[in-house]
Length: 143
Image (cartoon, rainbow, N blue to C red):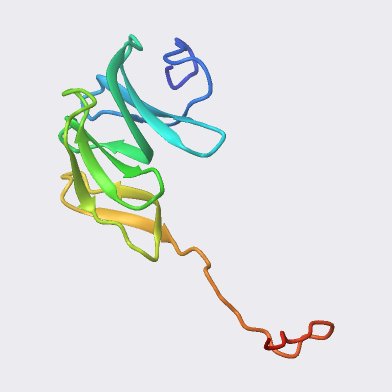
């Protein structure tokens, strides 16, 4: 659509999220999200809306600086990876930022030249606590 709201065209019907336009303006990636918060990344040609046959399981995604691949967070929020989208679904996946056992990637951005990535991580709360002397709860007895 134009900035003034005219020439609106539906590229992809249905519930989609987090679009990104390739640097050359020829492709648009988007996400479909299931009820279990598992996202799929798909790509269409712009402005026709024709699917290009790429599909990946991942969260936040962006086109690489050269426009030939997609950088995305794999489902589960662990690795940030890069994959060529024009070579088909079996193109190799290259890990750019390895998984952390303690953090989950939420989103990221890249410099224009694609040489640096800045990422936002969340730290899930995992605690094991021993409570002693809680009123109404008796300590187990040894057999």
